[in-house]
Length: 235
Image (cartoon, rainbow, N blue to C red; front, side, top):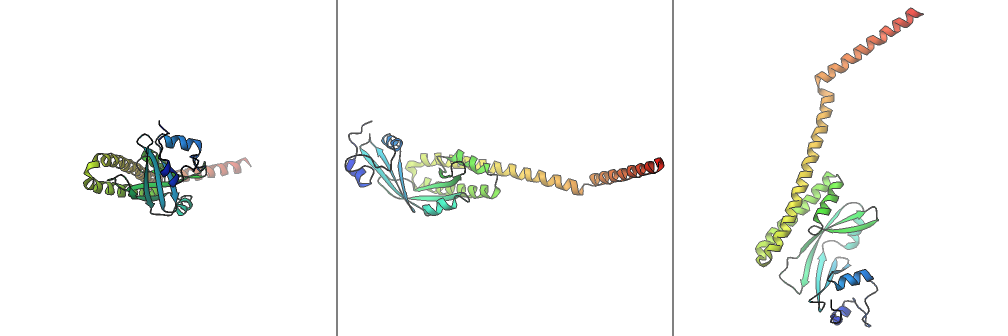
């Protein structure tokens, strides 16, 4: 890893390093080490997002500008009440062609009291598990609708960008897998619901059960009468 050929002018321009070449105080030691190893730095401001990544043996800075469909403060506030789904569109990038939509879910973690961002592709399995664990049919359907929207978008982009069709196909496979998982979960929920309804119907309407209950009530009444007679006799 070469740190002597960093694109210092660009890093200064975006406030990642200072004039004395020290890194911004907004970045901790772990952030800096990851950045130098190729990880991405993300900067958010309202609807705007910018990502920064070192490439070509740390000699180039890849900058991508994106725009979210919702304001970040609004997302963070509402995610404390329910899962918030957002779309982030790429505004500009030095590298092209690249399809421009990223779909995210913002979920409030009660254990840490923090809002966590999940990507529909990179965090697919974990995100589906978290949504399923809520055992909320409405939320599961909301999540499925977002997956279907993403699938439709990716299908359109295969024709538009044939040169990166392989990458898009990989993403499609992930999304399709999660849709199948959600469908299986929904089916299990329906089966459980039907079983519960069946039990209730049996208790209320089944004639054999009704007759058995009446017979037990008559038998109990006869036993009570016999006991009362026995008490009177002993007196």
